[in-house]
Image (cartoon, rainbow, N blue to C red; front, side, top):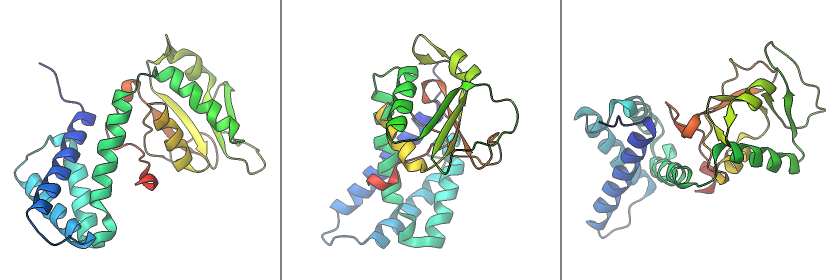
Amino acid sequence: MTTETYNQALVTLALAGIDALNTSASQHKAVRTAAQESHFLCNWMVESLKTKRFSKLVADDLTAWIRQARSQGAAAQLKRLLICIAEQYQQANESVIPTGTGLKQLLASLTQQQWVVITDTDIDTKLKLDSVGQSSLIISATEFNQHIQDQHIIKPIEMYIRGDEKIVAKFALQQGLLLSQGNKKTSLIKHHKTYTLIPKNNHASLCLLCLEQY
């Protein structure tokens, strides 16, 4: 018996939400406004949560999105969120680029963008990087050298990033990689956030999304 992963449960939810919205829209002649779409999806999520339609792995996501929709209305942009999740998670899942290779190509892309990229120094205590305001990405040498095997990421790799995370997420997705959300509290580098890469992109919570392209 195969256990459903968080990623699978999330994509199932996103696709079901998009399908429900499209089906509802086809039954109405008038074009729905963004506010009406948000209202529909919010109610759909409430019902889905109440009936436990989806895996408990995504229950916290549903709860958070319902709260956002109730407080923000159309500004919660639930439709865009679900489309973004479905397309980006499926793009990463269908990528044929080995994750280790993808990481190295991501670093090369950022270097071309004039980022400071450091992978040859062990990071085991709090440090400060003097980079004259340049965007930067740092990976501990131990993780970079030992957590990639046969061009695949085999153990989690933490990346300490200072810069536009949207750029990193975009380049990462092009290489079939999904990044965790940034965490400032766990960073060992001052003024940086920690982002994590997981083997096979099997994150346990919602990854960093490229919302700007939708």
